[in-house]
Image (cartoon, rainbow, N blue to C red; front, side, top):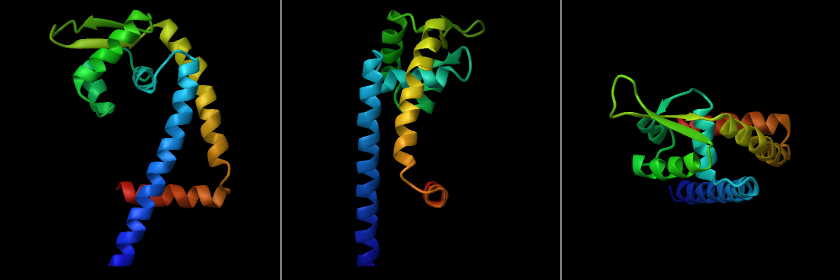
Amino acid sequence: MKEVRNESIQIQHLIFNLFSIIKKQADSIFRKHGLTGAQVGVLTRLSEMAGKPMNKLSEELWCDVSNITGVVERLEKQNLVWRSTHPEDRRINLIGLTSRGRTALEDTLPEHEAALIERISRLSAEERQTLTKILTKLVE
């Protein structure tokens, strides 16, 4: 049991380190484009559908509506998103991408994806498939 505990801690440590490396790299790329990771997260989620409710965004990004509200306000000031009330329920705020927001996302994501691909390309095709299977199994 002690061996499994030690391996579990080592695996957690490696996963956290990898996440930290990827996040720092992503944040650096996003900053070059005048965005934060949270802002890119919101823009990415909004690219999936127009007029997404604020509470749906907070669920998808695993954070409080109050946090999303602040991010959306900053994006709105940059004219990257629009906000309006739901036509049938005025208590619901709908958020969507502006054309400028879509362009910002299209300018930012390729560089981020290229950095991810460069890192993952260090693994062989077989290693990538194995890692995907292992991580999927742990997530389930």
